[in-house]
Structures are given as C-alpha cells and as structure tokens.
Image 1: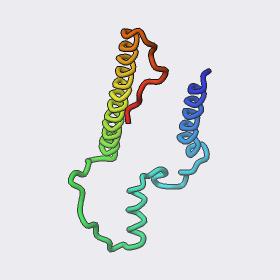
Image 2 (image 1 turned 30 degrees about the vertical axis):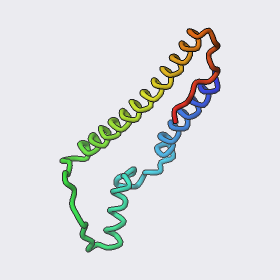
Image 3 (image 1 turned 180 degrees about the vertical axis):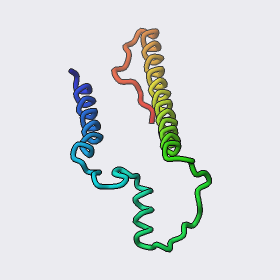
Image 4 (image 1 turned 60 degrees about the horizontal axis):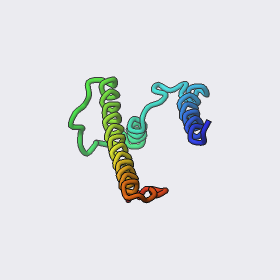
Length: 121
C-alpha cells in the first residue's frame, strides 16, 4: 500500500472512531436529547441564566419539524461540498491542462519536458 493509501486509511479509521466512540462510551445516556446541537445547548444555558430573556429577532423561516430542519441542514452541507469539489476539480484540470500543453510544446520543439509543471498561485 502506498504512503497516501496508508494516510487515507488512518484518517478514515480516525473519523469512524470519532463517530462511534461517543456512542460506545455512553456519553449521551441520561439526557433527554443526548447529542443536541450547540444552538440548543446555548438556548438552554441562556434560559437557565436569565429566564426572562427575550431574543432580539425571530427566524425568517421556522421548519415544521426537526426532520425538515435536519434535511435542510444536510442539503446546505451537500451544496457547500459540491461547490468546493467543483472548485478544486477545475483548479486541478487547469493545472493538468497547462502541464500537458507545456509537455506538448516541449516535445514539438525537440526539447525535453520540464520535470515539474508551473503551479498556480
């Protein structure tokens, strides 16, 4: 296995451990919502400290259920991942295209192709 393969396998195992360990160790037992998000925890802490606190504004859209809210959050994350993947794919394609054009130009001129293609800033 190559060095990159070993690193990728190690990272995958680390992510799996981060997902499974809290469940295996029972870190959420005894709570009404064991793995509530930071927003819910902040809201409960504020209401404990100042029960008469009034928010400055209300949300523009309140989803009808927690499932819809989770689905919208997952959709937002998927769209963000898609934009990032597109950006990095275009960047890599441009770099490969520039390297290929440089190699073809060098081969056509009878010279040798450079060892390392020029990198984008």
